Length: 165
Image (cartoon, rainbow, N blue to C red):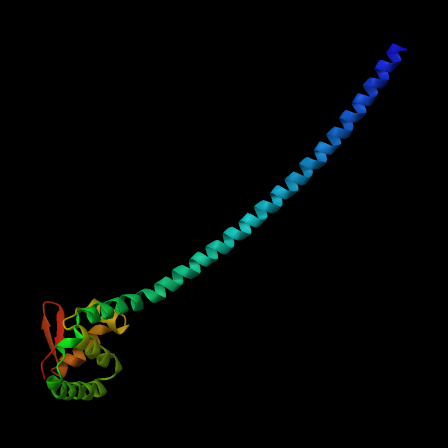
C-alpha cells in the first residue's frame, strides 16, 4: 500500500508539474506578445521622432537667414542712442530720406532693399547684403551693378556703402 501511495503521490506531483508548466508557458507566450507589441510601439515612436526632427531641420533651414538678418538689425538698434538725434537735425534727415526714397522708387525692389540695408548698417559686403535683404548672394551683384551705374555706391575692399547725397 505504501507503494501505491507513493505512485499516487508521484502522479499527483507530475500532474501539478504539468499544470505549472502549462501555466508558465502561457505566461511566457503573453510576455512575448507584450514584448512584440512594445517593440512595434517603440518603432512607431522612433519614426514619429525622426519625422519631427526632419521637420524642425527644414524649418531651421528656412528661418536661419531671417534670424541672422534680425540679429544684425537688433544689434544695430542696440548701438543707436536715441538721445543722439536732435530736433535740429530732423529737417535735414527728412530731406535726406526723401532723396533716398526717390532713388528707391527708380531702381526697383531688390536694389531698394540694398539701399535700405546700407542706410541701416553702413558698409556691408555681398554676403551681409544677402542676409539683410533676404535675397540669394548670387543676385546681389546685379543690384550692386544697378546702384553703381546710378552713381550711388562707394566700394572699398569688397565692402559697399552709399555715397553722401
